[in-house]
Structures are given as C-alpha cells and as structure tokens.
Length: 340
Image (cartoon, rainbow, N blue to C red; front, side):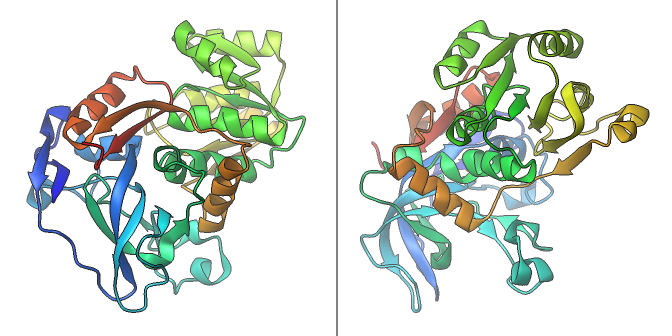
C-alpha cells in the first residue's frame, strides 16, 4: 500500500510517498481503508524533529492521527464490522491507572496518540472507533479528533457557558477556528486575533464576534481592553508571550487554558497580578472519546460545520505540510489517501 512517510526530519521536503506492506489485524483490531486524515501541528513537530518518540533510527515514519474511513477487515474480538463507516479516537491509554479507571482518560499516566493515518490503510484498536452517520462526510469528520476535540475540552476546562466572552489568540489555525465555532455552538462570544485581515474576515464569517489584526501583544491587549473589556476565559494554543497576554485580558477569577506552544515553549508571567486576581492557568491535552462522540453528533445534527481549508491526495502530503509550515492556511488541511 502507499503511505506518506517522513524519510528525513527537518522540513516538508522530508515527506515522500513510500510503499509498505498491507497491515493485518490483530486481536481486537480493525483495518480501516483511510478516506481522510487531517494534518495537525503535532505532525509537523514530529517532522521537524521535536518529538522524543521519533528520530533517524525510526524512519521512515508514518504520522497522521485523525483517521476517518471504512472498516475493511477485523481481527478476533473486534467491536466493529466490515463496511462500517468510522472515525478513530487517537487516544492510546493504559487502561489500568487511576485516570483510566476514574477519568478523564486523557490524563492517563501513559497517554499516547495513534500515528499511521497518512496511508491507504491503517490498523487500529477497534474499541477506539466511533460510528459515523451516513450524513457526516469523511473529510469533515477527520477534522474533529485533534483540533475540535482539543478546543471542546478546553472550553469545558474553562467552564465556558452561554453569555461568556472568550479570548482566542492566533484564532485562524485549526484549534483557533474550532474554538470560535464551538463557542458559537454554546452561545459564548469570542475575540480572535490574527496578523491577516483576510483570515479575520473568514473568521467573522464562521462566528467570531470581535477581531484584532495584530501579532503584537501590547497592541492586542490595548484593543481588547478598550473594545471588549476583560474576558471570562482565554483559550491559548500559542503559549510563549501570549500566556501573560491572556492573563492581562482575562477577568479576576478567570481561567486560561493552554494546549500548545506554537509561539514558544516557555512563558514568563507577572506573579503579583496573577495571584491577586486569583486567576487560573490550566494545561489541556486532547479530550475524551465520549467528547469526540458528542462532536460527531453536533456535526450530524447540523449544529457544527467544520472548516476545511484544503484537501490533498496522498502524493500531495508534502505540500500539505508546506502549507501548514507557511501558516497560510485557514481551517483544517486534510489528506485523502484514497482520492486518487
């Protein structure tokens, strides 16, 4: 079968089409014919050599978390049937620690993520497959497991409800757009930033209430405070200097959730105001399988329409990574391995 594999670490030039043997299902596994798999910042970090799990000795490496497709074959004990339309929850957990027993599962002490979706077929844990209704397309479904699930879980961790206002710095990427849309679903107002007015225009089209065209934290703080006031929560996938910015625009007692490090792996905060204002900063990684099932229902019910920025054949996966690296995309980039 064909795969889009990382043959060198560094940049998108290291992505090539590589032939591999067809997978066979083990016990409790299923083989899924992959119709769509979205590209995430997580995949790009691996390609850039920033993951401790992948190095030159493990190449070629096939990434891809967000698998949507059709079950082609099942192993003994699998909980799905051949021909089922499915979406993979990429969470991999030990099933034994306190968090696996009592929840939430994404706090598992051995938490990992599935990789292998940039291929024509993928062998997966059948218990992690979610049934896809016929009216939910594979491409739109593949946007959900990482970006939309991460955004949904962050909104829950920050206790966002109808009437709240949420600040989303860097709001035109996958998690940012997802946050804007999901806030709209729950009835919360949003403030989003970007350095591109073209992207901000599209962001307003999908429900953003107030936009700020700037990448400068001081300019953003001034605009948010003067135009909106202090917000109830901040959903931050950038980290770096945007962590302190989030505190500066969030109300007393408000919460900021951080899920990424696109703007920097370290953040410096001004402690006095942080504790005097009794604010909270919480870390957030992915979400739970029941939460992903809920997102599928939102799409099926017509309450959520995921934004797809572009689609690519398997042979065009290198270009998909180049587009993500250039940060020109709006919404999710999706590889469709069986589209050619």
